[in-house]
Amino acid sequence: MRSSPLRYLRLLFVVLPLMGGLLGCDAIGGPSKPTIVITAPTNGAEFQVGDEVSVLSSANDAKGVIRVELYVDGVLYRTDPGGGSGLAMFQTWLAEGPGIHTLSVVAINEDGVGSKPWAVTVRVVDDGLSPSPSPTTDEAPPPTATTAVPPPPGTATTPPPTPTQPPGSSDAPLITYFRANGAEGSITVDAGTTVTLSWEWERVSEGHLDPGNVGLACPTMPCTRNVSPGSTTTYTLRAINSSGTAEASVTVEVRAGSGGSGPDLVVDNLVVTPSEVEYGTSMEVSVGVMNVGDMPSGPYAVLWQWGREAGEVCEWEQPSLPARNGGTLRCTVDEVVGVAQPTVATVDSRGQVDESNEDNNSKELTIRVYYPMGDPPDLYISEIRIEPAEPVQGSSAMVGVRIHNGGDAEATDFNVRWRSAEPSGGCDWHVASLAPGASSWQQCEYTYTGRGHFNTSAIVDVDGDVAEADEDNNEERLAIDVVHP
View (cartoon, one colour):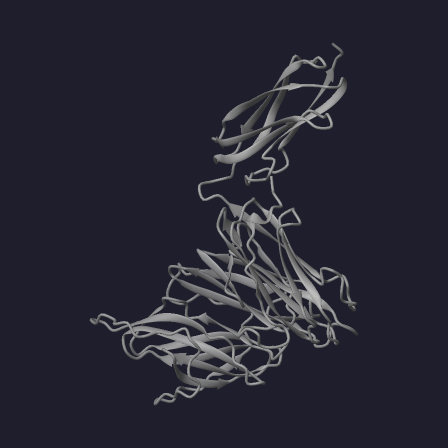
């Protein structure tokens, strides 16, 4: 049974300022900050000394990315021109010197604002030599560093509609197709429109979707994931196994000024990390918010609700959001309980903003909570027994409630309650532990003060302390007649 107490939830708000720089991080409002990810090579890739390493990155910014900088071990290696709000950048690096090297990229937009660097670590080896580690850094690289060897020119390219299998191994992963709303290459939609990404792949042990390096699970084919970009975005699918990596990209073009007259707030994105979380561990929540309209929004609130109870939420109070601006809000859930849970993010949750479109304020995502050793417990009541079957008014009767655990894991520290159906009165028990497949009787004495027909009831896991496989079978009822002495 789920529970609303807030003890399960400690909100660590990383509320990104909307109209300025209270924190040095992405902001809703203020100057646009680009994003960039490296899609190749992957972390841990190995190259020989003298190899020409291809560095492929995907950059996005609403105002346009004007250049991409490639750094090697924190030193600027090359700068290449960009163009457009979403692009794929192809750059090369000559692998010199054995050891561990960090490759990082930074995207610069038309305002001169740089993205946070995205870095991968690779190993360069020389036959007969043991690689020695080189210093690495995750900090923003120095802007004026140069290299003595001029690199070949880079090119900004349109992402390919379909991938190719990495050469050299028939065991490498294969992406059969990657589409947006059934189309390959690119599609054009209004801001806030839900787009279905679909794909099929083979020989995949690990999958990711960029932007965001979001982990993917795909139990059945075709695989799907819904997105709602607020600006033009290139989505890159990566399929990985021990033999290599396959990639495919599609671009979702967002029409400028499609929000109508007035403000129009949308939930641009909703990501829960990890998407399948282990019971009792933590998860991170990211809610992307966008004003796709043509006027500032004024103050508004954002609400993220997890599970069935209204008490389990993250909530943010936000100042006015300029037209065609957006950003990300984050919080942390420290202790995740439950099983498959619906999560819903809602912008303007209190209806403070008069919007041109009031029907696009929410986005829903279902997460799976799993037990590390198998399926969770399942508590239910199989019987309520009262002796005598027709209690006598004013005389003591014996009440018994039989509980079962029909799940595959132990249930611990939960409460059981029987209610007599009189205005007040009943019995409560605490159960420390109930093993999988086990049952237990809870008993008490009770004396009815009234007489007539009573609908008694018993509930197991009254306070919702146990995450169960079935949360809807915790209650049982028994009708009795209390007779005159």
